[in-house]
Image (cartoon, rainbow, N blue to C red; front, side, top):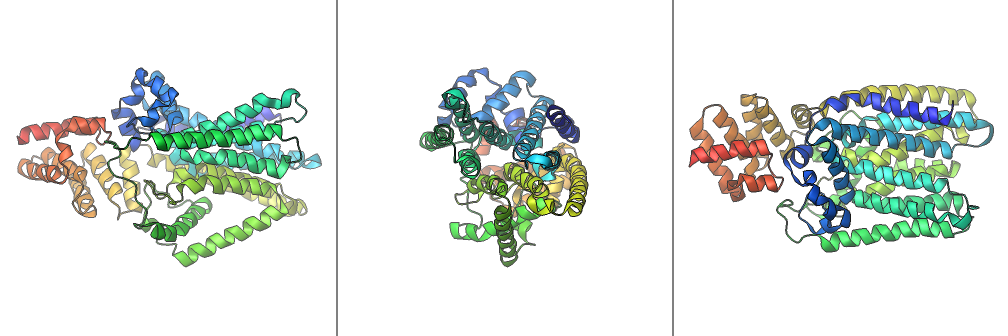
Length: 512
């Protein structure tokens, strides 16, 4: 089969698997940034985003201008229609799957095993394309940043793989393109800092005997561009923010506590790759209760030992391991981040996992055992099919706010965010008694110190005709969080959806 046809079939399968997402609504942050927020819909903001001035602005994703530009392109075409944003993300994911196939194919074993290598490349790409762990990044447009990081990183690697040392002029334009993609990767999200490192590891593994001019420009230029962007990002960051009212905290409350929890988070990621049964939109300590630190340590040591043996047997595995490990470093709680763990953090690492699986099937150990290899390929294909069905099922969770928060609260019932989200989603569909219970649970989980669940409770009580109780809840909300007195300001700060703000404003008007 011709390579172009293989790539087209792979893209078509990816689109078919993610077809349900095209009819999904906005959920989670997309409701605030796309449905409620105005920044991405204002053409006047193109100049600040493209010039880098946005780095000094109090805007959601101010530090990710490529992500903002991506959403602004959708906004220019689709307005606030969810279909177009989902279409862009699904197409981008299909492109990334094709690039995984291209990398796997480009480094397949040479000679008479080429055809087998291509089939293994297809399995690798499909594993990446349909694994349920990638659904969060694909299904939520405001998490597209991880798709963009992957597209730029994989694109730079593919470009570098096509470098011909005999090219006139040292192939300078290709090197500059690689460096530019490294810049775009880190301008999509901080984890893009992995892009130049991945290029450097590829050079060290496969191309270090070549003249160094191309690689100096591609890798060194990419590193310089990434460092320069990160320096500007931190130097220009606004000192105060109405959007980021609370600073991120270490899980457990301190650096040492976070480092004691991190092995359990990494073990959770390993479990989700092998058995993605407990995927969740909001992980917490409850999510790793089945992974005590000693067990997590055993899992991680086992993975390290397996990686060492795999790399010794096949140096391609070192590149796969780099694609898994390097993007996880910026989100490993070394510095505080808003979400200690998330499925979307595993989007680019899943490309590394998929490549490792493909190269294992294509590797020397199974090559010496053809019957075992045939069984392994069949097993892998069956596994991909099962994962594909699970991926379709997982997309139903991201289709509506109610489906998302029901699933999340069921899997993490001790966290404030799922309870609060569930209360609002239930209120929105008119299931008021259930919404009241969820709102009171969110108040309990936040020790009554957050205003938003009090607002939700007040709106629920008002909708039930319990005006006196609604006024009492509204008063508690204002007592806990005085800024709630100005609903319009909350909307501008992307802290409240416009419809909620309108209902809240009406209730405040009646209370006066």
